[in-house]
Amino acid sequence: MSRAKKHEHVNHERWLVSYADFITLLFAFFVVLFASSQSDRKKQKEVAAAMQTAFTPLGSFEAHAKTPPIEQAPSASTITRPAALALPFPQAGQTTREEEMKERLSRLLRQAGGRLPEGSVTTRITPDGLVISLHEIGFFPSGAAEVRRESIPMLAALAETIPNAPLRVEGHTDNVPIHTAQFSSNWELSTARASAIARLLLECGAIHPENVSAAGYAEYHPVASNATEAGRSMNRRVDIILLRAPAASR
Image 1: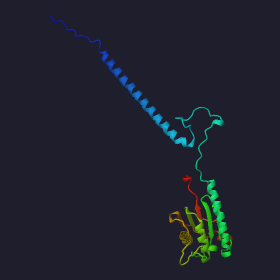
Image 2 (image 1 turned 90 degrees about the horizontal axis):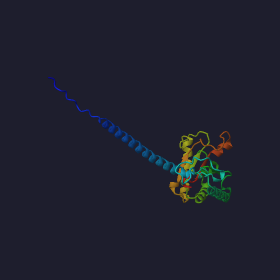
Image 3 (image 1 turned 135 degrees about the vertical axis):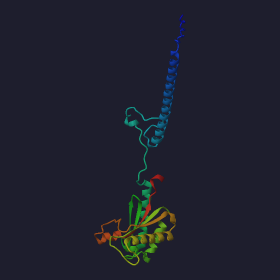
Image 4 (image 1 turned 30 degrees about the vertical axis):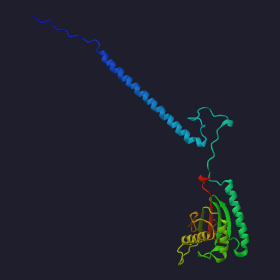
């Protein structure tokens, strides 16, 4: 007699487990998407704020705007003009002071009278500042760096006239080579002359040493052609440059 087979109970709700897992995963997926969108929005705000901070000094964006305007260009009467940038050009006040200094130097030369040869001192205004050129004919013997005695009173008066401000003393020569027991090349001669003038300015004036620098450029910064004697005479000089204030400090 065969046994009656025992039928197992079929669980028709097993699909609910898979469905619950799917819903859980879907919920987690949307949570991740939501968190990512919030993070991106925060980053966008940070980037917009950084751009606003960077461009506001230039006047590129309006002060209250967090992002650049996307509307059509406004009329000419409502355009926001960029703020003025510091350019490497002299301001009106600086140019005025340089012109006043040139006039004072002219009076000083007139007072010197015939003690210095004509053309011993010239002045010009350059992007670096006012340049006072002391030419060899009035201040140095040929091939030497000792200052002529007759020019020392004028240099002393010049030192008292020059303001206590940054200046650079540059020595220059012509392109004729030199080789003596004291100077092996024009580099040494130009540097020695610049140092001699700088030392006199410090001794006779109220200029602080930290405001003074000296350099020799030999024949490599001419102001005239070395093909003629007149040009070479102009190139044999010591330039005192009254430096302008840098753009950042104006």
